[in-house]
Length: 325
Image 1 (cartoon, one colour):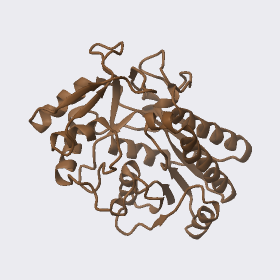
Image 2 (cartoon, one colour):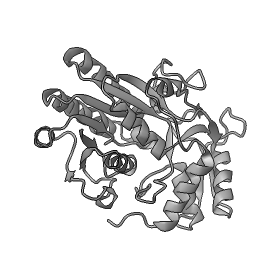
Image 3 (tube, one colour):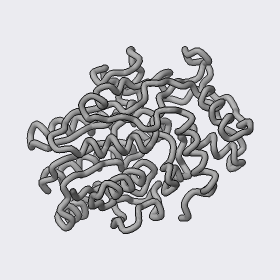
Image 4 (spheres, helix red, strand yellow):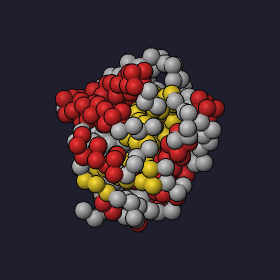
């Protein structure tokens, strides 16, 4: 199978590319390198530097490489940034996705897998969150992703575009083989920031909001290992699969709990500073992922928070400055 991976030089995309290559698939990467790195792309995989919204470029790639499936990661992902720059998020996440979907339809792509987010649920009333929970985002980031889900639904009805939407909870960790990891300088992932603070690469870790209605006042999130996430995409490439699925482990950890777990693994205190809440952050997001387990045959290999942190910590120790530019 020939697979086009958009955003394949980024954190999640680069892990996906390695897993696809390991599975024997032919892979092509399209990335504008705004947050990705050439060095992150698996050896031998073509990297085309460009935008997903560049329809002539995308159409040529689909034709020249006889692309069967698209896995679409390319997006802006920082929730507070989306509140400050909503139009930028709608341009990059929604308008560019619309252009890509149109190319997929016109190019006869058989399968489209979309990287969505738990942010489409907003502040859910039910925890763990099932896939049929109301989709009421509380940030432009969440809305930009939900709009793409809706476009895929409508393109499926009108044009028969087979697609799967995967709604991620908090993705963390790194390739256990040490081939790639989180290296985006602007990434705000809690475990990445904690590792950098432990290494002295930043003076402290900011804890945003300590007055949430949770046991210790900090936000609760569900963490999923990057490799488990990538494996769910491999399963989503199976013929005949359609629908939307949550990807998480079903276990919620507060910010303070994650920091304590990080301190235990790195063997030293991590300096923290309490800050006000950030806009767009719900108090609690934990996945119900039984649907993916049941229908895709997905079974997480690395469900423990300690494993997720350990793999991330090994990556950051070995690559304290990330990838070279």
